Image (cartoon, rainbow over all chains, first blue to last red; front, top):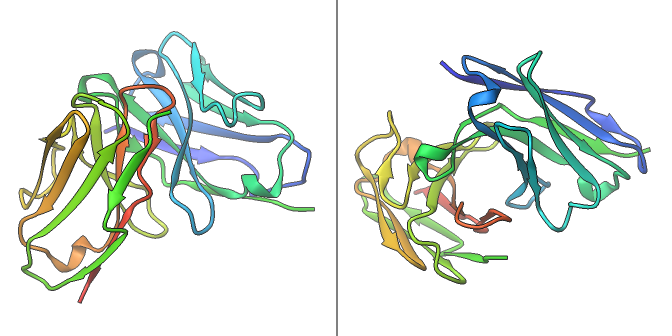
Length: 119
Length: 107
């Protein structure tokens, strides 16, 4: 059974870097694509970007200048870094697997972690 | 970017009702359309992938159809556990995008 678990600080100061990790169990991160999605308070789901099984990444244009998603194959985890955080980055952040055989649907999700950007 | 528009934005229905949600893409996405159910405080749950394929473990009262730009999700007989926000999601082109959601309330 594939499971994902997000970890990282729940509070980030403005202008600092928001950094989260998604620990994957039950599957090798080298075999799938992986993605991050967030939900700001009172809003819908927003796709942040994905990293491929080979480590290449694609991002939302609205975040591309600040975001990096990368693989850590030695630890079977992947990470999100969002620089120059602002209050607008306050959200619940979810990691998920993109399943190519399922039309790249997000078939397995982490439980989510809430990040607040505030001084 | 491909814009995804869902309607209605919310609905309230009785247990046993047949409920239909719609999703429209701003340009054609073939069958790269997925549906999720999201309940507060929980992870979103994949219901349908590839426009019409039922995810394993999802009750058969959920069905979906469509191709190109117009898609529907139908709950054949609404159950108490079906409350939540339903999102469509296109995985045809980067940036992947979600609809704004349809909130389903049980009367």
